[in-house]
Image (cartoon, rainbow, N blue to C red):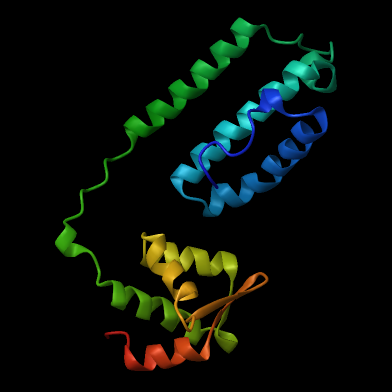
Length: 183
């Protein structure tokens, strides 16, 4: 995900607005479970932008404009709802324990992190992990995504992407033999 992806919702055609809205809702579960905090924030902002624009253009297609139990909320009601939503989010953040500031000297050695990740692949059947599982393991071991990306990009690559699977290559197995995981 990138910062503020795409064209502003107000500039989208009706067809593109609906397509992006459907895609945003389909991606929500993945971003919630596997995305970074930044990806979740960006996704939430974009999804809300798309929803608000859809509601502005087509209130009759939603419960808000159906004339049923509740009339379409006014602009002020919508602003009030957003402020309350942000207030709850801010309160939740303030209630969290602040993360301890890590001493740079406590950071793991990048080579040891790579070895630990490759070892997890080596332990998997046929050296293969589903991309979501591989992503979670990588995030646990290496908060620095560039460290993991190098495993795919170096020549020869130590890991390959094959559809939804991530696979340890022969080069990755050879690298792991030269850099065993410390006990």
